Length: 270
Image 1 (cartoon, helix red, strand yellow):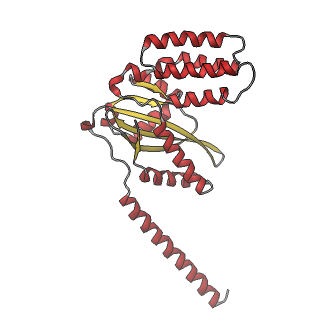
Image 2 (image 1 turned 30 degrees about the vertical axis):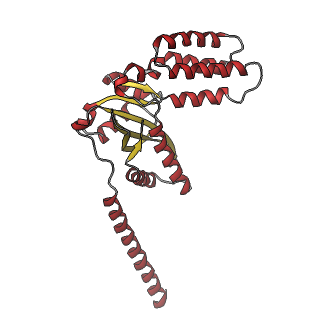
Image 3 (image 1 turned 135 degrees about the vertical axis):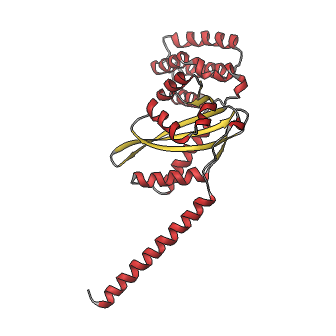
């Protein structure tokens, strides 16, 4: 390599190092100006956790991003307290580790309820800690729409009627009315022309019915009926990664999760 070529290479390296340093300083300044959501304290009173997770496949491994939001009972906004990336599947241990990592001891002592889909690890953890558990209505209705909507044939009317009864059970605060609706729903799914996939889904719904109606059992907690606030964060993550055509490393994903955590410290949640 002659002297002029070496000089150009050295200049290129110098420019690259200078640009990287400026970028680092710019990001450091941006992070100072965009702090993550603050923790709650005892003045905030009882807290509700709104939780969800999304799956990723990176570097030939499976990961989940645990989405943790917390909201005071009487509040309209939840704080995005953490986006925790862990290897493996959803589990009791992973959620317990996430709470210990993200929440302060004061916050953990203030938790009285969680709102989520039927995540097995969360169900066992809520039972262990005595937290009320509100199952997400949106997830259930979305699944029912997928297996009941758009079908033709003899079972169409029954499918649509089943969805109507499920909606009515979810929407009524009156336990006596809900019990009557449940009996009618059981008769509908017992009919021979009820598809097996629908019967299975409704049987699962009825098995866990009390958790879908926790909001009526504890009206003083003003529980949201869906985990849509956490779902919203999941969509933000997917949209950001879609704009970037995905990420190809765990390090890159952790970086962008930190950016999103700082960009959206509060999410509307009622």
